[in-house]
Length: 232
Ligand code: APR
Image (cartoon, rainbow, N blue to C red):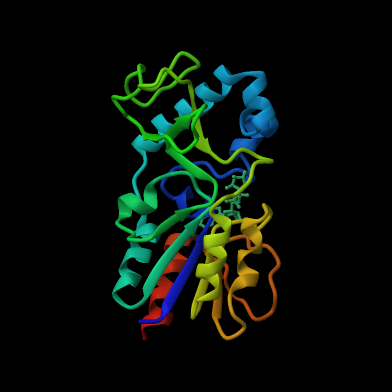
């Protein structure tokens, strides 16, 4: 089977009711990025950051994978599919995708402040707080505080290197629902081999090199069209 690598951004979850970041009414219109998504912000006001991610976790439990997420699972019948996502939601996993690599972390996980390899999936009974919400009073079984398992702005993106290796093996590379404005994720497209077919699905696409086949549609529509093109 040929390798299909799919790089997704917030746009693929928009039709599940999850806010994107930079569209009108997006998350960054209501919050100061450097307050709620940076390491300095966490050091300055950890309670605000815990509350911000608690709210997003609760919203996520009310959201469901949409036809675009499910369409990527359908493509596993025809390709060896790897999904590389900038999203911190778990909608690809809940749709049934077999291989999902998160570049910017995972909303449903927190990790120890003292040992970052200790990662906990919420709701987790290891933590003194119950349910999906954490605070500065939440401690793990070792008595250590926790933080969201999210890559804050300015922090390293440890999964970028394995993502580049996947992109470099792509026969088909697809970008869905991203402004391609945040690095290093936005650079992934360049790691696809020159021989790869490249598609970009976005209703308001950023400018991309001429070899990229742009499908200027919403993800649910665009993925349906992509499946027809790739499986005919
Ligand atoms: N279907 C497909 N794409 C859509 C849809 C939809 N229904 N609705 C909006 N979009 C597109 C927009 O046109 C835009 O290109 O989704 C993209 C959303 O862009 P951003 O909000 O910038 O999201 P993203 O590109 O994923 O942001 C990258 O920035 O804030 C950080 O870490 C955060 O992972 C995020 C990163």
